[in-house]
Length: 81
Image: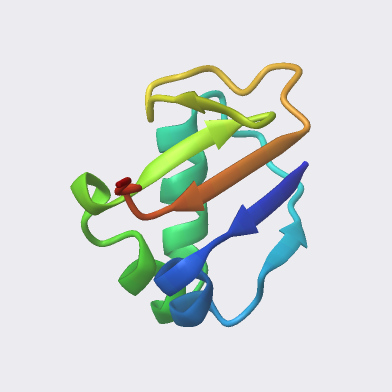
């Protein structure tokens, strides 16, 4: 699946997107797999309350299932005005 990073998440990880092979069942499982890769991932995912996730461009939760998902995007909370 494609994993896309925005804003400071992209800056901490160092890439805007990557193709990931995963056996993760949920977003939280994927985050755990990514965090275990390297320190830069662990730093980016250290505080999940500071992150939002979208599955196939739809806002979702970290306990959401990944079955059939083609794209996961991580980004900070959005503010509007």
